[in-house]
Length: 152
Picture 1 (cartoon, rainbow, N blue to C red):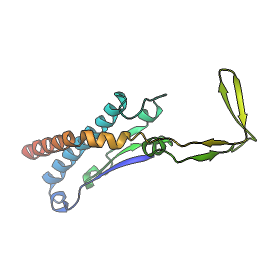
Picture 2 (cartoon, rainbow, N blue to C red; picture 1 turned 120 degrees about the horizontal axis):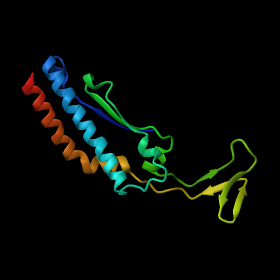
Picture 3 (cartoon, rainbow, N blue to C red; picture 1 turned 90 degrees about the vertical axis):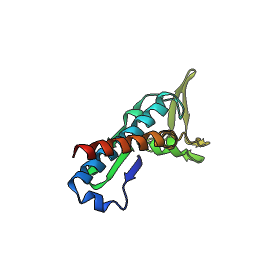
């Protein structure tokens, strides 16, 4: 699992007022959703990696359950998300439940007692999305925040 944690700091005075809490929640929601869209845009356009099954992209979700406390998250729930985002060092792969590993090729199956994996390079889909989408997310925060304050 990989997370982007979004938290407001030093804004307790704003959370103490009803209008301030609503405005901050609206702004933070738009900020988070903007970054969420940026993550999907980076993946869709193939600027981080080329998805094979779509599972990783489908596992990305927004958690707004603590939005009234000034907190939100974007989470990639796929178990291998950290390996895609940060890459891996060279490592040995051994069978867990059997005596050998097996995988299919065009010529047939290959069996091995262990595999020395060379590691994989990182494909930073979250970091790239933040770099590319942060300014737009800031603008959307301000716009939603001010619009909500005007209404209250």
